[in-house]
Picture (cartoon, rainbow, N blue to C red):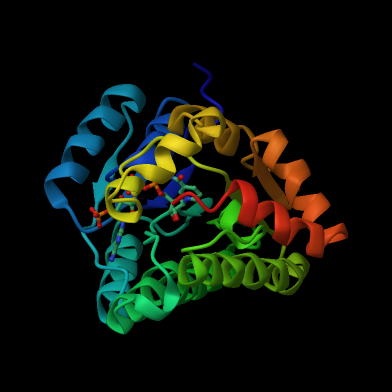
Length: 264
Ligand code: NAP
């Protein structure tokens, strides 16, 4: 692998599993110093050991529940104690639950927004200020195809991801004068632990097999676009086209979504 991220610092939230885990290793494989954030310390330590093996560079683990602003403050302090700069922030932590909105436990909706949206925004605010002082950096936020194309049983999750996408669109404009880039990643279904929580019945996973992405492939693309001016990474291409068509013909899109994408 190349050494293109040697001496660069990459902070990854959601690094204990799935796409975040793969992005951490993809970055370490290019020599980066990685800072790993999620709740599960044991899993993070395992990822850190793999990352260090790949990079030979320092790796740091800061267990944090991103639904808590106090814990986010504490994580930021720990980051500043070990490094004075952050080159890339990858906000990958998040979860979903596929249920009809009116049947959802409202506390679950609250936590989903605390992690997927407010935690991401608050952490971004802290790292964003640091990047403004540095006059360089890139923030990569995980939205989802769910934030672009509606499908049943995901009103709350889709709303959280639509919020991330539009938050990122505005942030991109606000941070551009400081030389800071903002990219959104909007994947379709990716084969990770995400569905252990989101899709307990397993129906959705069965129905979207043909669109399923590999987390390592998603991570490869994300790391490939580190430092680029790309606004959005929409994956796979077939769903990216579908999202564009939905924007143009939303009424037909609604009918097709009900017909083909409601078997959750
Ligand atoms: P995953 O394997 O379940 O990973 C989710 C990560 O988020 C884990 O590292 C988890 O770590 C972390 N996390 C969850 N709640 C947290 C909290 N309260 N505080 C801190 N960290 C928390 O799922 P994934 O597929 O890799 O998901 C990564 C991102 O991609 C998510 O934002 C998801 O919405 C998005 N996405 C996924 C898919 C998909 O089909 N898989 C599609 C589109 C978008 P801990 O449990 O250790 O805290």
